[in-house]
Image 1 (cartoon, helix red, strand yellow):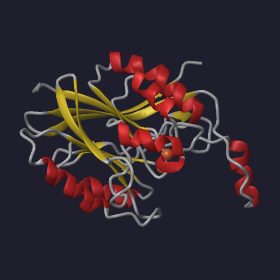
Image 2 (image 1 turned 90 degrees about the horizontal axis):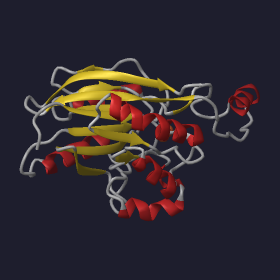
Image 3 (image 1 turned 180 degrees about the vertical axis):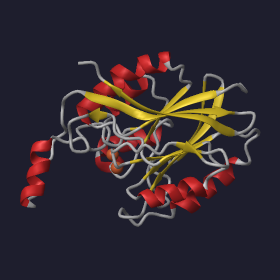
Image 4 (image 1 turned 90 degrees about the vertical axis):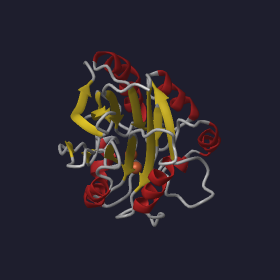
Length: 267
Ligand SMILES: [Fe+2]
Ligand SMILES: [Fe+2]
């Protein structure tokens, strides 16, 4: 395994057709120009804004994504369930109850680097999942049995900022990066904690810019004016690829540099 700097890109929720277009057109060039070794992308909203189809998953892999993570919408497309079982590079949150299809974590290799990814779902203002903190502990503990240490990357798909910061600091020194997804609004709080863990509360969305977290504003605004639940449709239009680049030093076992990314489509 290589011992020089491992540079990985963590990308936020791909939303609808605009998100798929941003991912598949902007990502390949970004991987080249920024010299990215590995890409982890949350794609729970890729297909029409809800879930992920097997076809869209393959398009993301072709564009250079190495690991796809999920969230609260992962199980909404029934034809996707077998893919969760068969495709090791596709994760769903690890803190679903025992017996849930698919897997919530995995160990991967790319460009001579070995890395682990854990996908977790938050509970505050969300669902009564198994404890994501204890689940993270259990996975990290099980990885100690591996022959050599490797960086752990955590996608914490959660609503609450305080739960995300708590997770980041809980895992400081044990994970290479803890990043949040789900809110679709990129936060400007990227940093490296004292123990060497890269952190950002939300990677932001990969999708249409003039949208209400990915959906067309017309009905989203009408909902607010009327309190009637008008149907929400994904917004198409110019968008951005958003996320965080992390440089990780395998020798010290610490993240050494973070860079927030918001790459806009050319118009
Ligand atoms: Fe999302
Ligand atoms: Fe979500």
